[in-house]
Amino acid sequence: MKSKFLIVAIVAFLALILFNAGSPAETSTFTPSTLYADNGISIMLQGADTSGLKLSIDNQFAENIRIYCANAVINGFSIPALLSQDVYSGNTANTTLYFDPDMLLAAGISKIADVNLYVHITDENKRDIYDGRVSATLDSSYVQPIDSSGVVVYSSEDYFISARPNDLNNPRRAAIIYVENKTDNQLSLVCNSLSINGKMLNGMFSVQNVEAQSRAQFILDPYMLKMFDDSNADAMNVSHVDNMSIRLGLNPWRGTTISTADMFSTDVIQIIGK
Image 1 (cartoon, rainbow, N blue to C red):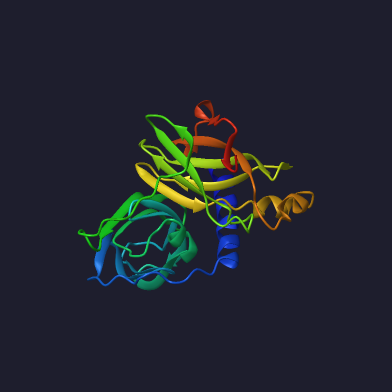
Image 2 (cartoon, one colour):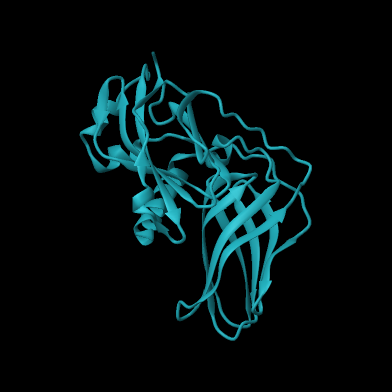
């Protein structure tokens, strides 16, 4: 199941990059930091801007390796990331871990002050070398602004979700979703159903993975529904969003797989309009 969600996440991530062209946020200035050093392998953080993180990966391990990363937490907010890098034994690779600049802007991030990456290192036979989190603090004095205002979509000891209007003239950018994951497990959010101005859109779509003990803030973009079902084009062909209602599905992970026994959905909540 994890591979299916990874494929969906990569497709959605690439679609976001093609659509979004956000203005660059502030570039952080910092001294290079060691993210990982073990097994003859080192990962150095050499630079950071809103297009990604500059990495230097040195492999003195006895075998060729591959490093993956699909999730990052920047300033406490989960941000989709993209890295897949081969490094031959005895070689060094200078590469970039990419993320969508507009996702940082949607999360209210104007400065990269704290970095957490979830990396998976394997040898050429796909045997695990390391699978976990690596971290670097670039500015310990920086306080990330947080805005959890809006309509409460769901609230419990484990999760908090709210929604607020954004750009009502564009159904792809009409609402911002804010999420707090207070558990020690990753959470996958899915939009189970959605209506715009009284018209239902057919289908469901993945909206965000939220890492353990982190937040997320993102623009709810139903474009995936339009891509896969032409009948949704009419519902999205509006010049102004007067009302919008959603039902979100919460899919908690347990280890490396989604726990189907713990999956549940919110009530239908009107997040725009009266």
